[in-house]
Length: 124
Image: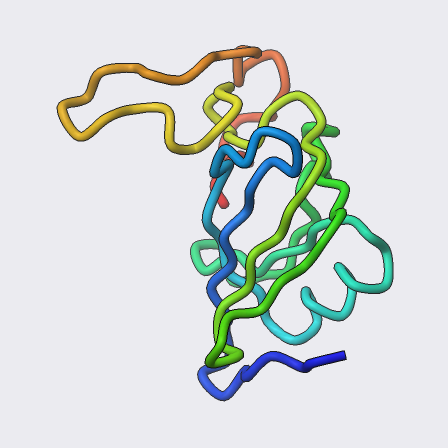
């Protein structure tokens, strides 16, 4: 297995739906998140805002089942192809990229955040 270059501490990760190829989200991994993702088959990330490791869906139940992990040519960026339970975005949309640059909603909302998250816990 190719081990990514964690020289900077965190590795950028692009997450796509394995079937539709829709980009679901962007996140970061540290070495521990990468190891846990590879060992469990469930996506783990490192939250820069909370300064901690987190398993995607640990609160919402909307986990990401990793079907394939790819690494770029410089070995410093990952692409995860996942089966996403319910939605990737904490705002309730399938993808975190649910708006265009003019602010128009172009994505599909599938849940209300207040029904899923405790107050103040939905930051990535």
